[in-house]
Image (cartoon, rainbow, N blue to C red):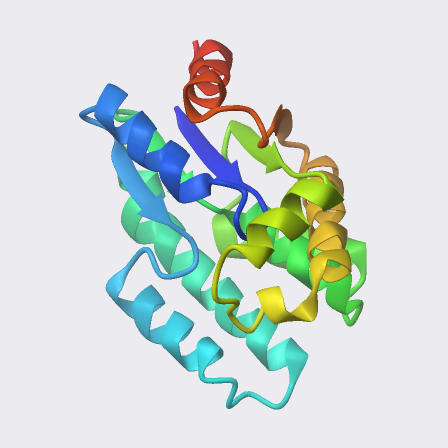
Length: 191
């Protein structure tokens, strides 16, 4: 089974992936972007913010996605549990926020990059505005987080829209619950 853990910054994706890796010891743990050697280089290039065009940035993410599917997902999808920190869903969500590419084009381009292979289930660790703002106040903010809670909440909504566009089963989980409860909800929905 191929699943993805999605959510905006501070939602607890890394914590849940760590917990799941303890339970599913033979699982392939991966991430997008940057889950392959080339993907790490692409991610580094995108984070350097040298691309002036949002379309160029989007196409770099598609290149990372294509490589990730070919190198990690396709060889393992029939024989292992695959748990991904983010997926094509995040890529589509961020592109929806940018507004430079139509929904139809987003789906077509992602279908091309992924060979139509998407997670069977996406788990969205969902935050309320109050919980998000509290968590942001407790840490040093990165470039995305500095855009503010309204921006991050738009991304969270866009993640839901992206799962609908890509026809992926979505399981929403209240990210303000305690870690063990969230892990149990994920496991209950995997089985």
